[in-house]
Image (cartoon, rainbow, N blue to C red; front, top):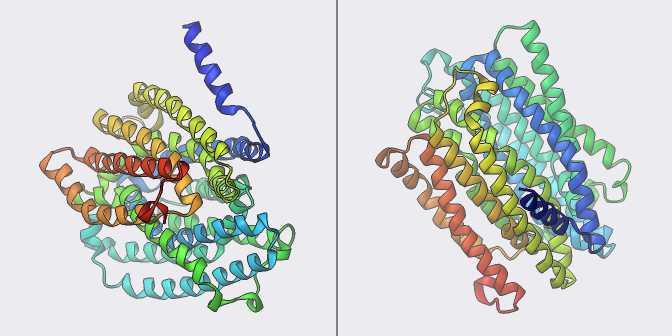
Length: 458
C-alpha cells in the first residue's frame, strides 16, 4: 500500500515539474483556478437541491432542458472567440497591439449585431414552437414556458456580445481571471435564489430572471473594469472596426464555430434528447448523475484550459520539446483521472442519497456510463487542445460532419432498440470520444514528426 502511494506521489511530482517560464505561467493559472472552480463546484452542488426544492422536480428538468438550448446560442461567441484567441496570442507575443485592437473591435461589433438579431429572432420563433410536445408539459403551461425561454435567450444574446473579454484573458494566459468572472456571477445567482426561496413561492419565471441576469451583470462589470485598466490600450472602439480585414479572423472563427456546434449537439444536448425521448422528469435523473461525475471534467478543464494558448505559443516558436514533454505529462494525468472516476463510481449511490435524498433514483448503469464518458473525455481533451491551439482543425471539421449526421439516429438506436434508456445518450457520446481520440492522436503524431500533409496539416 505504501509503495503504491509513493508511486502516485512520484507521478504528481513528474507531472508538476516546472521546466520553463511557459510552464510556470500555466501552473500559476491552474493553482488559482483550482480554488475558483472549486468554489464554483460547491455552489453548483448547493444550487441543485436548492433549486429542486424551489421549483419541484419536473420544473427543474424543464429548466435544465431550457439551459441546454441556450448553449446553442453561446457557441457563436465561443466559435469566433477561439479564432480571436489564437490570433491574439501571436499579436501579444509580437507586441502588435494595433492589430489586436482592430481584431477585438471588429469581433465586438459583429457580436453586438448578432446579439440584436438573435434577440429579435427568438422573440418571433418562440411563438411558433410547440413547447408542450417538446417538454411533455400541460398545455396550460405553454405561455409561462414561452416567457421563460424568451428571457433566457435574450440574456444569452447579450452575453454573446460581452464574452470576447474571455478570449483576451485566455490569449494573455490569464485563464484564472475568466474563472473569477464566472464565480462572481454564480455567487450572485446563489444569493438571489436563497432570497427567492426565503421570500417567494416557487416560480420558474423567477428562477429564469435570476439565472439570466446575474451572468450579464458580472460580464458587464468585467468588461468595463478590464478595458478601463489593464487592457485599455486594446479597448474596442468603433473607429478601430475593420470589417474588410476580418477574413482571417472569421475564417478561422467560422471553423471553430462549426466545431462548437457539433460539440454542443453531441456533448451538451443530452438534456434535450432525454426530454424528447423519455420525458422531462428523466432530465432531472440525468442531470444529477451528470453533475456528480461532472466534477472531474470541471477540474480537468481547470488544468487543460491554460494549455490551449501555451500550445499556440510553443508551436509558433517551434518548441516541440516542450510540446512532447507536456503531452506526456497530460497523458499521465489521465491515469489519475481514471483512479478518481473509479472512486466516484464506488461511492455514487451513497453520494446521491446524501445529496438529493431518496426522491430521485439514479440507475447504477447510468453512473457506469458517465464514468466511462469522463475518462474518454479527458483522454480526448489532451490531444484536442493541442490541435485547436495550433489551428489545424480540418480533420476535426470533417469528422464533425459525420458526427452531426449520425448523432440522433445513434441515440434512437441506443435508447429504443438497445433499451439502454438514459444511459444510451451517454454511451453515444463516449463512442464518439473514442473515435475522435484515434483521429486526434494520429494527427498529433504526424505534426510532431513533421509527416503531416494534406488534411492532416490544415
